[in-house]
Length: 279
Image (cartoon, rainbow, N blue to C red; front, side):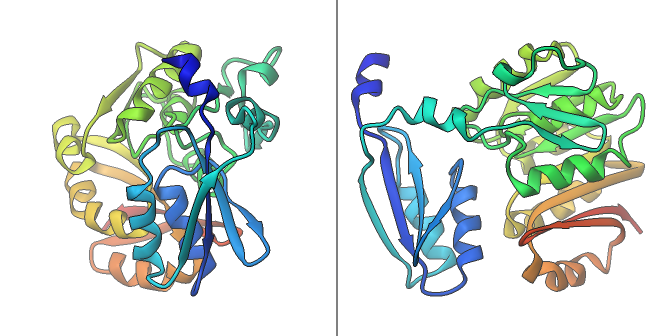
């Protein structure tokens, strides 16, 4: 099975946006892309052999109904290995995110070792880095943290390395679960990080109360999750939201205004992240 997959070509997805390129890029990341690059008028990404591209098409067209989507076999390259050459060390505050082959000799208490599998969250993406920045001012010793849309579990691992007693990594993409569990084991935090597969809206009430919620998901899903996050937080709880485009900031502030107060925010590139607490 593994040999057949290795010989099969990866799938190159080329999208020509008719509208906002940033929204289309965000949709591709939300659909599981590990990297999107500009190629003239098009955005190009790759998916492994056999990956179901139906949800990818649906996500792109939901963001831009007039976008043109072309799929072709990618060049005969081992993308699982080629991807590694584009992954470097990310230093955010007192934390470092590194792939296994670059992590040797780095302090274990502040280094998060993440194998860049298909799970979102190697520290390369701007939204991940900004959550890592904001959470360093929020997570306290002994906290319980819920990480929604956990992907590779990078944020859950970061939370316990910042002093949290426990982190629950909730991820609904079954393909990401194995990678998350491997990363948890690789960082030696098995006893403090629990990876759960399922819908965050259903599972969050079951692990409440938590003092910190981390949610690096597209903005439309964040809005849907806000009531569940509000109910799950302890009295002094805080949440960090990311995956929000800068252009969506004003709308998100309006949504938050009734029940939340903004305590901190960060921006990188086209992405905006925010730390909030209940009013």
